[in-house]
Amino acid sequence: MILTKRITFYGNENDAYGLPIPWKSYMIFSSSSSAIHNKSVASILPITIDARDVANPYHIFDNDQAAIEKALAYLKQLPSNKGLNLEEME
Image: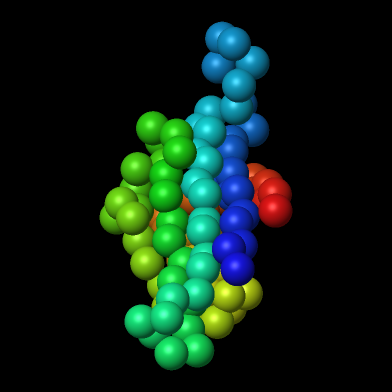
């Protein structure tokens, strides 16, 4: 099974096109692996230029949902994401 979640951190001010500054989007993919018994691998992939503050890709090992939650916690603690608004989409 593959789980995905799109995470966006965004600021309160807009650029000339009406987009929030900054606008940082990431995709988190979590899937089980036969090579890792009872564990899944969650990978964080930056999908906007501003989101390149994570290693590409960044991996977390746990069960499916726990791996997603740990990935989200990692993104929330990044200094560049602190104080920004958060949007989560499954």
